[in-house]
Amino acid sequence: MRSQAIAKQLSDGRALQWRVLWGMMLTTLFVLAQALTAQARPESLAPLAEQVSPSVVNITTTTVVEGRAGPQGIVPEGSPLEDLFRDFQNRGDNGPRPRRSSALGSGFVISEDGFIVTNNHVIEGADEIEIEFFPGEGQPKELLPAKVIGTDQNTDLALLKVEAPSPLKFVTFGDSDTARVGDWVIAMGNPLGQGFSVSAGIVSARNRELQGNYDDFIQTDAAINRGNSGGPLFNMDGEVVGVNTAILSPNGGSIGIGFSMASNVASKVVAQLKEFGETRRGWLGVRIQNLDEDVADAMGLDTARGALVTDVPEGPAAEAGLLSGDVILSFDGVEVEDTRGLVRQVGNTDVGKTVRVLVFRDGKTETLRVTLGRREDAERTSDSEEVPAPEGEDETTEKELLGLTVGVLTDEIRTELNVPEGTDGLVILAVDEASEAWEKGLRAGDVITEAGQEKIADIASLESRIDAVRDAGRKSLLLLIRRNGEPRFVALNLSE
Image: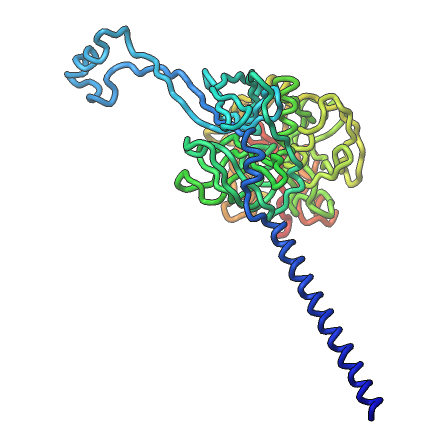
């Protein structure tokens, strides 16, 4: 009996020890969870704001606007009192006087010697630019004049320079590619002219595109308003991951949808502006479009990826042997998903670099070596005249095919559409509004120059290409369409 009692006491003791250990483990886990929560979201953003705020600046711009002549808005034009009011308005005057218009924005210092980043639209057209620094120890107390080092309209960025009496406090660009949806960020600037202000939020989305080919915006719900333009978006390490640029709003105020140009785009642009005073983007020299499933099927591709070349004007690509109808699958060792990705990758590549371009052509792949030119030079020399739309139809031999009424491209029609001499093809005279061709945007006045990636000059050649593609077992016919001089590929279904 005594041995049983001793055994029971030992068993109870071990159970008690386990309960104590289990309680200690739970307490430890609870403490760790609290610590991790506190680490994920700090109790206050004040230390971070104090750290980075000396580098944030207010920007005031002044523009001289010509005065308006006459009593506009006072009396109706042609009124008998018009001359009287004009004489009164200009009495003792030599005419309308120019007036000064001011605007506000934000920016941030990126070097101790006074380089400042902001938006191009903040300083565009300004006659005077003045910089006000955040009030703090060691910062200039007075407004400092700034000069423009360079601007880039494509990304809406500008680089300024001030001469300060002492080294300035500055911030650095971070890696925007590491920013995750849900990460905390803070925006700083001069919203609505109210002075220095801080707002906090999270990264709401990544890789937003607004208008430009080089857009890569971070979307945030941190409050951004007028006057915040050009200010920095900071991560929790005090690094700039975006330049606050735009908001989406029905009333002009923040509704929690703001956009900051990603720092990995901004830093490259700023570096070029600092070195050259302008951007120097790579240029391939092709016109391209995205592939859809129908176009991919018509070309014999398994997936709709890559960039389809619609035209190859004189330039680096033409010299390297790229052809209209090629599909660019990879550029400089990086796979091409779509046209936007290719444009950005080419633009970020050094001018003069020779790169490998993998293309899909005639059912197989081929690698070409292209030495890139400079986009800015090409844009300055390009002819951007608009081609007038056709005013009517020409009586000629015609036929209905694939929902299209097509006719031969005669000299008269060629002149009317301003089609270059030597261009052969068929002109679309009408489009059945119930057809797939109408749904895909084909219209009267469009010119078909290729069918099934072969040139056509008459209706018989188009019919021949339709039969050949059907015999090959393909479901769609690929057409190269030109409208106002701009080419694009369209795939039409061949099913009856």
